[in-house]
Image (cartoon, rainbow, N blue to C red; front, side, top):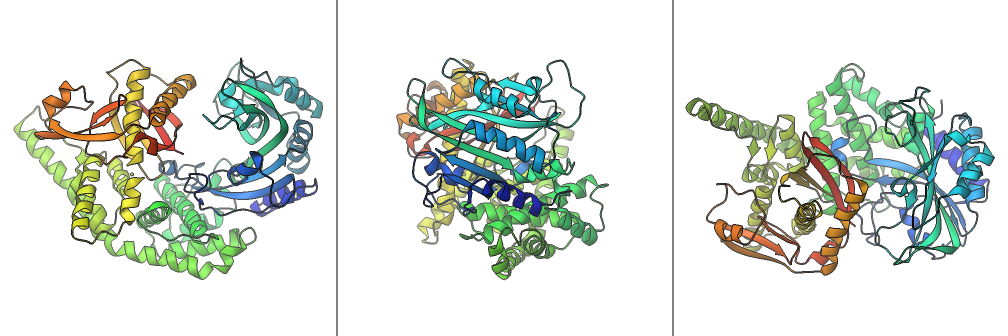
Length: 607
């Protein structure tokens, strides 16, 4: 067995012994230069130096273990692999060594330090295309260090190539990903790391930045860089033969504590297991964000809003588990005193402050949570009673399953429920939330507050962000119709947080990588055009005549708002939106998946 502390130290020692400077970790909180709220990748703080700037240390060989926070997939937390905080073990060559040394070192690390069988290790390399040749150089070096030829897989650009999309003049190049089989039972004759059967575990990734992106293709770089990333949480579980990431020593003390306090079994109770995972993950991330060198506190705007959402979600799941939310401070202490004391000594220094901030937020939300849950249940029960009454009167009546925007806003304004929390609770009982109605109620409240001189601006900043992403959903909707030449494609649902948008639409199959790239390009072309986003009020008939997109029904009143983005989009909507498409900066699709039968889901960010 290897502990998290041993793994972290082994990584750093291995590269320090090979002339690398341990540069330590930087703040988890974005400083505004990268366009993201949190540090989401180990290489993110190194980007200026990978792009050619000299590192302040003067060194060309660097290594560290960098904490990262990513909440785009927060709704997936609760399974055995998703975390909102994670650590990336990295090392870099800034124009120093290249493929020969890096291939050799990665193999040595995996076999001699971590004890993996070299006869089983697999690797993927770039298969080449019309713009860049096949990476035979890396493949040959892999064979020399001991990788079997049949364990080397050539994969296309989407799998084994790194570059900043849409950015000319920046370094880019092929990557070499390392895999290890969990068992020796192939799913078929073409079983490999890319087949998706789950047999192979990715243990790390070496990126070789050997080209410069040009307007027409790629040209070789004079100074070549190496960027390596190995996920500590994932590798720790794999090396210990664990498939559940919450059973490593990063979480096990917290899980055992929750079992003691709740009297429930992590292994035998599925609902309790999900609650324990969410509580453990969210309190770990909250502890890290509050205890960071640029630590934040819960608020209603930006990163503080994400922190508040994490804490309030943890509080709700603590109640569902049957434990007092006050135990969340004890969990934070476990992370500080037993798990991250060596790696993050600042947490120990700030322990009292971190614990007090979690306690304050817990007390604040606890005061209204019980009443808010009663209000939520009363809302659901009211809709169900109406459905029963109407169904008895009219056999053709279609039951309602949507919480109105005004009801959702009351839960937010009066009881402190983030809209995402209301959506999550609604989904658990088979309901949805009128998010556009919530946004309209929010905007109405905002305008009234401004007129009364009581609005302080914090929520306005957040709304400017819940606004740019909203505009992006309109462009994505239009892009889908244009790219697939199909006006039968319609929105089936959406969800917008301060970090990402989620858009559901009817479509019969998985979208290919090439089609996703075309969708991105369509939206980014509209953004680059920087057209004004205008709003007009008109009748539904006028909106139809102008070709406005909308699911026309009797829910619209006599007048509707139509938002127009030049030639790109015209859609009925309650707002709010950006002032111009240029304010969206750059659109990036991060995930495409099935939502339900005949419905696909796209998640995207603005960076």
